[in-house]
Length: 117
Image (cartoon, rainbow, N blue to C red; front, side, top):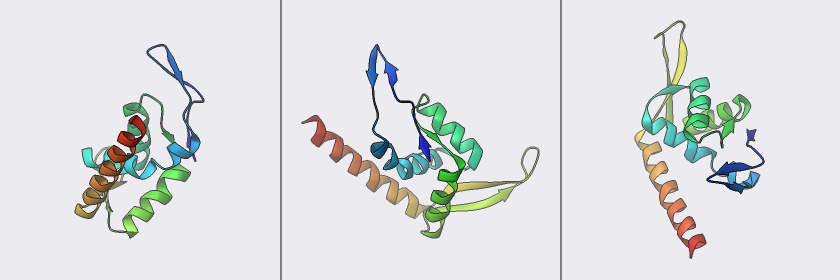
């Protein structure tokens, strides 16, 4: 499940974010995070939360099914690495995933432009 604060304060303005809007954003959040660098699951959860100033808080039960789905679609690939204290499963974006990210970003720009108009 994707959890989020009921209200987010920024610049003195309180904004409520729809659960449906957040739910539709998980794939682009994950692909965008993987565009920056390969990363393991728990670190990805923390990275997304940090980069969004706490707006997006994915739970493991939400993240891993999406990662597995993206992997089965060829947009993400996983590998094991023993860097650090113990072996971890890392994920990285593929060329197909980069293409999908670009499509999703273009879709977002079109959506946002229409809303702004």
